[in-house]
Amino acid sequence: MSSSDEQSFSNEQALIAELEAFKASSSKTIDKLSRDLSRQKRIMERSDKRQQREYDELQTRLQEIRDLSEEIEATQREVVFTMGSIGESRSKETGNHVKRVAEYSYLLAKFYGLSEKECQILKEASPMHDIGKVAIPDAILNKPGRLDDAERKVMDTHARLGYDMLKHSKRLLLKTASIVAYEHHEKYDGNGYPQGNKGEEIHIYGRITALADVFDALGSERVYKAKWSDDKIFSLLREERGKHFDPNLIDIFFDKLDVFLEVRDRLTDIK
Amino acid sequence: MESLIIEETKYTPKISMDAASGVIEMSGKSYPENTFDFYAPVMKWLEDYFTTTNKIVINMEIIYFNSSSSKLFFDFFDLCDEKRDTHDIEINWIYDADNENAEEAGEDFIEDFEFLRINLVVKK
Image (cartoon, rainbow over all chains, first blue to last red):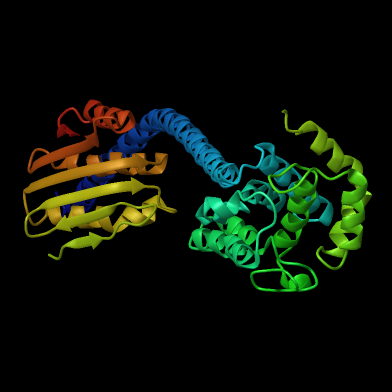
C-alpha cells in the first residue's frame, strides 16, 4: 500500500467513525423526539382532565363560599333586625314600626339619590335606631303621659347609648346603624340632640331616619298619645320643613306620598 | 458543588437541592410563567450533580401543576432514567389522600418510567 493509499484509507476510517457517531447521536435525538411526540398527546390529555377536575372543584368551593357569605349576611341582617325589635318591644311599640321605618328609610334614600347598595344598608340598619332604649329604665320608657324634664333627659340619652353600643364595629351594617342611632333625633335647624348639629352636618342617614321615625310614630298609637290623623301629620311635617326635617326630604316625601302610604297600608299593625 | 434553593412563590414551588445530602425536594404549586426557563437551573443542577455522586433521593410534593410543568417533570425523570444503571435514585411522589389529581399523576409517572424507583407516598 502506498502512503497516499494509506492516507486515503485513514480518511475513510475517520469519516466512517464520524458518520457512525452522527448516526448514533441523531438516532438518539430522533428517539427522544418520537418519545416526546408520543408523550405530548398523553400529557395534554391528562392535563386537560386534571384541569377540568380542578375547575370543577374550584366551582364547587366558590359556590360554597358564596352560600356561606350569603348565610353570614342573612344572619347579620336577622340579628340586626332582631336587636331593633328588642329595643322596640321594651318600649311596647308595635312590631311593625321597625319594618315601616326601614321601608320609609329605604324609599327616602332611593328618591334622594343614594346608591342601591347604600339604600339597602340603610334599610337594614334603620331598625336599630332606638336600640339605646334597652338601657332606659322601664318606668321612664313606658310612662304613660308626658315625661318631666329629668325623665326626658334620661330618655334622650338613648341616642348616645345606641351609638356607644355600635360604634366599635367595623361592619358596614353596624357602622351605619351607629350613625342612625346617634343622629336620628338631630334636627335640621340644630335644635335636636345629642349633638345639636344642623343642616348637612347631620349625616344623611340621620336626616332620613328622623323623618321616617317621626312620620311613623305620629301615625301610631303609643302609651302616651293617640294616633294622629293624616291631615294633622302632614301639616306638622310641612310646618317642620327646614326646622326639624331636611327640606329636600320633606319635598321628596310629599312628591312620592302615594308610595309611602302604600307601604304604610301594607305594613299596618293588626290589632 | 453548591446547593440550590428556590423559594416558593404564588405560582412556583419551593425547590431545595442539597449538594451535601443528595436530597432534592420540590413542594407547592407549579404554574410558572415560563416553565422551561424556571426549571432550567434545576435541570442543570441535576445533570451536574450526577457527575459528582451516585445516590440521590427526590421528594416531590406538587399539589397543582400545569401541562408544561407536567412535560418538564417527564424530562426531569428522563434525566434520572438515563442514570438508573449507574446511580441509586429514589423518587418519592408525595400527595394528600384527597388529592386525586396528584395521585393519578404519580401513577402516570410510574407507568412511564417502569425502571425508575418511584414511590407513591400518601400524606396523612
